[in-house]
Length: 108
Image 1: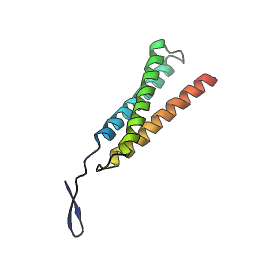
Image 2: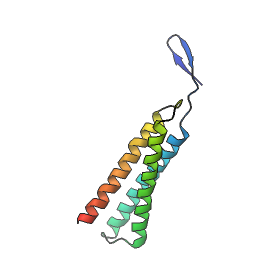
Image 3: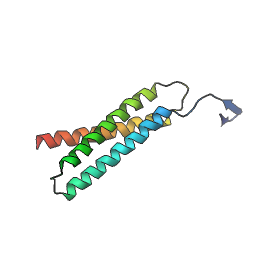
Image 4: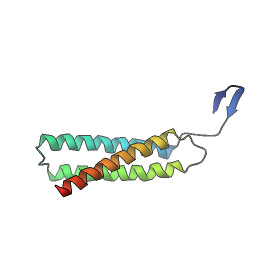
């Protein structure tokens, strides 16, 4: 793979991080689950079923796995950093919002 520079071409062996891409996909799934669970809970007036709670916990765990993989993908050498950084931000956001949601839920 090569990239264009002012004085010619620079050849590199860098590849897209597969772990970073997978972590980003998992973080998007976790954020999608968060939105779906909040929408269903709002529709039920805050009285969601056991299945809704299970879906929420599962989606939060997917976010934790995404965060773990995103952090590991940042350590990969010879790979582009776009997807690892994007996955880290998205998964950190997902896990943070899930944690805040559960903390508020326990306090109320």
